[in-house]
Image 1: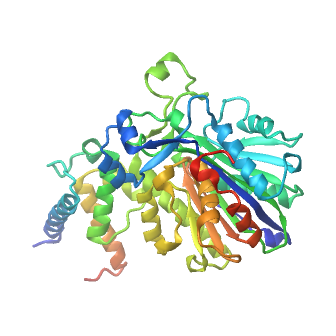
Image 2: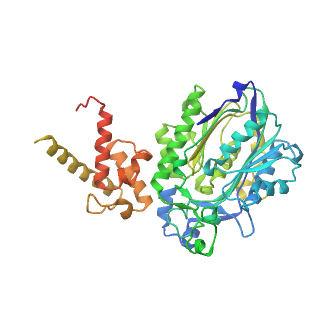
Image 3: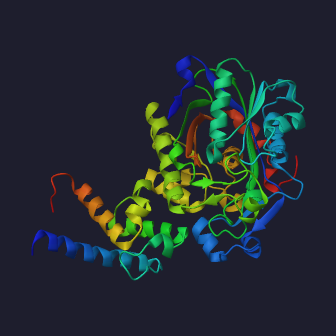
Length: 356
Length: 95
């Protein structure tokens, strides 16, 4: 794993604003079953803990969700499009294969000539984007927009028992700016283990197996999760190991944290992670019951959700942790400040899905 | 009873204990101890099974333990439990 501690460079980086957005269309477990999922309501509740998720409407795409989240984050940080030095968009479901979704978002946001690029790290995408943003700020950028957005619903086989009920669509964003050493983002840790690259994957549509009539007929353009138990165990271990690597590097433990904000994989997985890490369940933020797993967008939206709704005060340490396909994993330790909390609390319309 | 026979008796007992742990969570295992569980159970049931084994035997299943090679049948799970317990007892063996 790769650890970044900004204060060791004599600098600091903080999150000045966060935003989140969910599409308006609520998909209940009854809806999932009606769409062909070979599951019962009781099974979905027991196996995933998910009660509902949001899916995009026809014509709505990943960058539409990203746009709403990014606008909220910028407004909270008192920044405008002209302030953005760089845009990093983590997504596994871009609007197009070419060009980047970041360029589409660039145009929708009305950015100037700031560089914009996509980053793919599946469910760890937002932590990877924060790492990229922090490094950019440490080398001179003044304002970086780190966004994670996913529309998984367009790539899920509604008849696949393993995946049909798990995923939702959504977006989250953070504005990353310079700060004094010891403020804001105290540390970041990201890592990957490519031996797991086929654990969760979409076989067709890339250069290995370009889209064709046969790949579509074979349903190979959908997300596959062939070995659920491996993915389940690896995600939990990845989150715990990465968190422990970062905390031990900083001489801290889980007991020093006010709140852990994990990637919202599913409720059962988060309960296992909580149990094995010895965390106090009251200090683990969970909103997956009503969002589903939104891949990289999950931890971004959960951070926004936690900062705007959880009982946090300035000086509290919050640990963001994620693990996902690839395998990838990441952790980010933040100390929250009053400005960030009020920025997060100023934007609370995401729950209704109505544009602010 | 020689050591080999003792191991076989312990294994048999473990097979039954694995089946009992599964049954308690409502998981129906195939009748043969060597039968492939990846064919008999879907991924949700296999997650349920591995957590049933963890709870019943006080062991932690890590990703490397949950492959078809190490967790793919009742007999393989019993062998995993036996090895995990031996590791927990430490290199000196003990009770």
